[in-house]
Each structure stands twice: as C-alpha cells, then as structure tokens.
Length: 369
Image 1 (tube, rainbow, N blue to C red):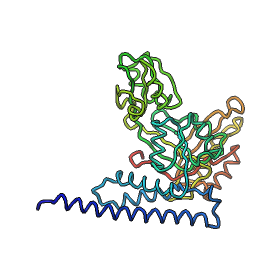
Image 2 (cartoon, rainbow, N blue to C red):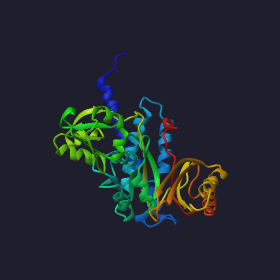
Image 3 (cartoon, helix red, strand yellow):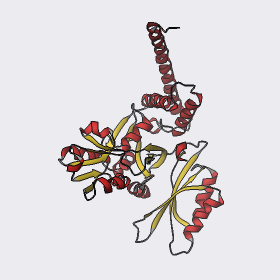
C-alpha cells in the first residue's frame, strides 16, 4: 500500500494543531500552580517563591521515560519536556540563572541542560561571582562545577561553600569532551589557554602532542577560547561549540584522557527542595585535631545510622595553619529528616561547626553507578 505524501502532511498539520492546544492548556495549569503556591498559607512572598522544583522535575522525566512507547528516543522526549518545563517556569516568574561564563563554557552547557532556553542567564567571570550573584539576590539560581571524574574536586567551589550561606538545591551531570581550537596549525601553536581542571583532564594529549608548550590557566574554557581567537599561535582547550562562537578551527577532537569524562555541577540557591524518594546531603564540619580519633569518631556517626558516604573532601579552614574543614556527602537521606537531625546532633559531640551545605535529589545517571 503506497503512502500519500499530501495526506501524511495533513495528518501532521492536524497533530500540530492538537499539540499547540495541549501545550497551552498545560501552560495554563502551570500558571494556576504558581498562583496556588502564592496563596498557600505556608508560602513566602511572591518574590521568594521557588518555581524550580528539582524533585518534581525528576519525577516528570522518569514518568516521560516510563510512558514513552517510541519511536522517539527517551533522551529526545526528555529534551522536549525540558523546554516545555523551562517555558512553564518562565511563565510563572522571571528567573535569572548565574553561570561561569562567558557563553560556550561547560557551566553554560550544564545550565541550559537544567533550566532550558526560556529563562534568563547571567554570565559571571568567576565561580566566586556566581555565588555572590545568588547571595545578593541578583540571580535566583547559580550553577557551579563541583567535581570531575578525572581531575577531582573543584577547589574554588569547595572554598566558597565554607563561608557562603547559599544552599545546594540540585545536582546535574554533564559528559565533557574537550577540543583543541585555534586559528593556527598544531605545529605552530606556542601557548594553550584553558581552565586548570580542563588542562588536568588532557594531560596525555598535551604530553604527546604539545610537550613543552606554555599552558596558561583561565577562569573558564570559554574565556580561553576568547583569548585564543585574538592571538596568533595560540590555542584553547574547550567545548566544541566555542569553535563556532569564537571563529576557531578544530585541530583535535575528544582529547580528554578518558572518554567517560564527566563533571558534576551543583545548582545553588537560598533554599533546598522538599524530600524525594532518593536524596543526597552534603555536610561540612571541623574537628579538634588535638584529640586523637576525632575525625574517626565523627565518621562513625554515619555508619551507626547506616548512611553510605559517597564523597569525602577537605580544605584548609584558613583560621589557622593545618586546620581543616571536612566535606562529607551521604546518600539516601534528606537534610530535613529525623535521621539527619540525629546525625548532626551526634556529630556535635566530636566535631565543630557542623553545617548542612545542601540536600538534593540523587540524579546520578544510571551508567555512572
């Protein structure tokens, strides 16, 4: 049986008409939800009411994936819903998201992945600037890199959490592939710009292809592309999209040491979300280093409550030499739970300055577990 092209196009037109009506109907319900939030007795004023609800977002993506019969791939359908939810957020409230820029950075990619194309974005020069934009209320949310699967923790982010009052509201994971971009040939390159973490992720390539070349650290990979685009014999290690944005040629692709290279980002705000079926919590504390076993006693509290630790880190407190702040992430518990309340109370027996930095839905991709 032959297919009639004109008939099929008429079917598409009819389906588009239905989709437009359904999308607007969904948008109206989203507006009604925003109004209901503002009218709720326990709601804060409109200016402080959160419209980005990571727990609900996770539920929607899981539902879409579960209900999808094909032929659309689940990732494609989720990308469509990402933009539908982004438009709904923008309808409810003007939302500004701070990220480590300029445009084309991996932080920009992570921000777009989490918030979509309908919200407003504010490029920041440093990670510290992202925190400040949220702290001062210029932006409702900020996106900061937290750790990389090759290079480890992002030190400036850890250091800002020590003194900042912002909270972690969500996490997102971004596969990271690096490109060497330049307006020169590889043989003519004399210096390479990039973020220190990106340079650390490409050591094998640099040693094999550009050994002895000057490596210049930058605030972000996209800033590196900006600089390389203005200098002769300069190159940048950055995101592929920077080639088009900054008019550079791709000299080498996928130059990271491991092809499963992934960076985890945190979405920061003034408050965390309500509990979900699967949450993680990040705490920080100090210990009296003069007391033998103080850190061991503190960590044992988590074991006593059957909490799995997924990350442990430390940074100098800067209060005095050789005094450290410890960061501990645990899975399966929300910061507002009774279990976490007991953990914080018991930690206080062995540790000082115990603080919950954030609590957020566990969104680690299945292929990384």
